[in-house]
Amino acid sequence: MIVKHADLLYLTSIAAQVAVRKDAVPILGCVLLSAGEGSLRAVATDLRARVEVDIPAEGELAAVALPARLLAQVVAA
View: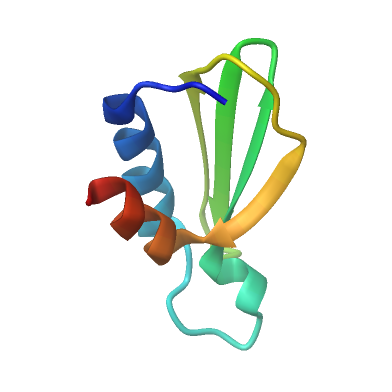
């Protein structure tokens, strides 16, 4: 997967704002990344709000759920 760093930073920072920090349902603290047709999509929810962000990308990625805060910290570093 090839994406611009600035685009990935934008995507992760938006998704991390919606993902829940502490919850009884751990998956709500994750962001779902999936790729297709020239874009990378991030989806996050706290069950009250949902955000979907698409950025241009090249390559393939099936789908993966990663901890939102950790992902945002790694991309920002």
